[in-house]
Amino acid sequence: MTHRVPLIIGNWKMHKTVAEAVHYVTVIIPHLIPLTGCEIGVAPAFTALAAVSAAAAGTPLHVFAQDVAAEGPTGAFTGEVAAEMLRDVGCQGVIIGHSERRRYYGETDGVVAAKVRRALEARLLPAVCVGETLSEREANAALDVVERQLRGIADALTDAAKQPIVLAYEPVWAIGTGRAATPELAQAMHRHIRAVWEARFGASAAATLRILYGGSVTADNIAGFIAQPDVDGALVGGASLSPDGFAQLIRRSCALTSGDGEGVLRSVE
Ligand code: PEP
Image (cartoon, rainbow, N blue to C red; front, side, top):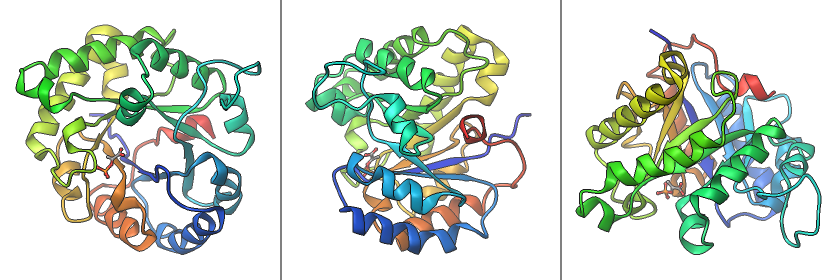
């Protein structure tokens, strides 16, 4: 069986000045150096990306942006940041289609797909979020909603066997609420996501696909998620904001994994 090295990404959202972000990196790196068996990323705001990338260069810490323009590589798109610009400041990946982008900024599945295409063209690893709202879950529509979102992402790929991509299942009702999904609920959805991927792209692409869980993950509940066979890491918001707290969460994840297997971030280094 393929061993998928877990990936843990901290999404800082709209937090931290440049000085705070660089201080965070200097605190967390000594915690990460002895750890094997997982890959780690943080996603600072645009303003801190260059400084965090410089501070993290040559260390196990990878840098993700929180969003990317659907257009580019250049053009008259005031306020937007192209995938190539993110690569230029040292990013290895980018979060795409976070529910806050879908909800507050009207991102459709089509926009998400365009952003995935742009990220891949610039050799950035897309970490693409899917997930249902509470009312969709209560209406028994969670599987349909996630399938629809996956179809949009899959349509953006031209060669899924060669294009690295990470998916994150983030039930909207679990994000920032302190009400995480149970590991069993996450596992059921992750298994479904992998089955959808297999039907579309074949067994080998599905077996290597990283599917992260996100939604109120903490150092106290991470182990239950990582222990699930189809949960390959986590996208962590609030619990990633303190370097010591995030380091503890990472330690508990890495301790559960064997340390061998190939990471997904290697393909974009
Ligand atoms: C997120 O923003 O992707 C997230 C999962 O947030 P939190 O961990 O705070 O729920």
